[in-house]
Length: 125
Image (cartoon, rainbow, N blue to C red; front, side):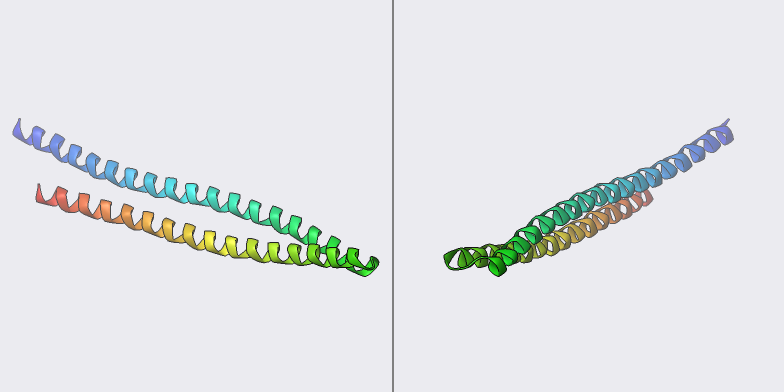
């Protein structure tokens, strides 16, 4: 009778460890997919805004070449606006990308530490 209980208890403990490993893996996968989706969305916004500002810059450059007088100065302003906009979008992209990478690493570190603490608490019990 006691041998049977010991076997069932050891099976349950083995299942508990497997469950903990599965939940840790599930958390890792969820974190990875969440941040991958955010990166894809960020890259999409980046390319959309780069395209918009490049079109604005090209329009301004064409205006500078074809216009005369004060219209040429306005076209130069539009060309500079397009170039500066593209520059700021690049800055935004790299800043946001770095922030996402740091957040992803922190989340993965948190998951690893949680798993480690769970293992240690299981050993002490």
